[in-house]
Length: 407
Image 1 (spheres, rainbow, N blue to C red):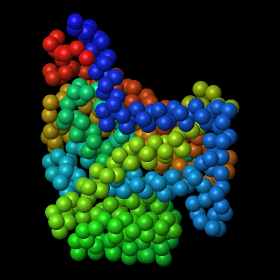
Image 2 (cartoon, helix red, strand yellow; image 1 turned 90 degrees about the vertical axis):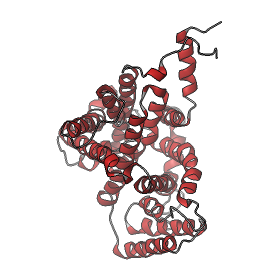
Image 3 (cartoon, helix red, strand yellow; image 1 turned 90 degrees about the horizontal axis):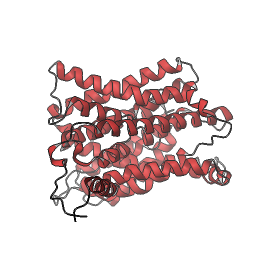
Image 4 (cartoon, rainbow, N blue to C red; image 1 turned 45 degrees about the vertical axis):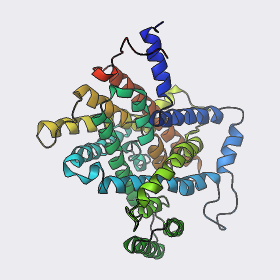
């Protein structure tokens, strides 16, 4: 006996949760919700003590809390994977072809600039909030692709590729922002870091075929960058660019490293980071806290700035004949994907921690308000983007076939 179409659809949607790209997004949502619940429960004190309690004096070693080890240490793996993805795309992927590169690059630049403008406009340009203007400029690849994964074939392959490439270019911009605006460089350590980096490029040039020298070089580079005043996670991106695309035996060390590390990054590193950083105590805060200048500016930048910047840039570039619209999609679908780019979870939380440093009460309050804005803006973007794409024209391959087998 055949199942009703609505039941087949429900089963298909439930199964979609366990596809790789969808599961990453679902996992991040679950982690964020869990962190928020715990941070506002009877064990909140233990939660904050776990991540922020001092392990030793800062005179012994700068990373003296679990929170710092996660943000400045563990997240190097995430940024290393980002660097591997970027290098692969630049050499053999979509960023290697100028014709394929132009549209996502134009979209990503506008998608970073307009949220900053929206942030400054909504926050009134107040000096105490200005350092947070880059927070809504980021896009979370895993989260956004996870939402797309839930939609199955409703999203054309060309748009999936567009979203992924925009997010990768976005990551390049976010890394540049961290390196330029959230660093306090020390010349001596920078020179030592540069020497280590040159040594790693030399290993590439002489076709060193073992991964271990690069692993050791990455750890040394991380320590030097950590002491240089530039954020330590930048070492991950720089080290990734030294990994050979091809070795003497013809194998791709870069692709092997990427395949090995992506699951660890997606299912361990990023969830741990999210759990440690998404927890916000709402004690003493009501719903009106969402309307405070900082969280409102961040949420508006993510929800409005991202979609307006990306969609208008794509529309203008296509109408001016600079590029072609992604094939096989409608403008409504382009709009839906533009909205999904407003999911800023991981990178936005990371920039938020850097934007308002310090252990004082005001710095803590600003970080918490930034988290509220990030979580709210990301959630609205995810739900709205999903709804828009869900209601767009059904693609032929997705139409229910009455001959579908009973599940």
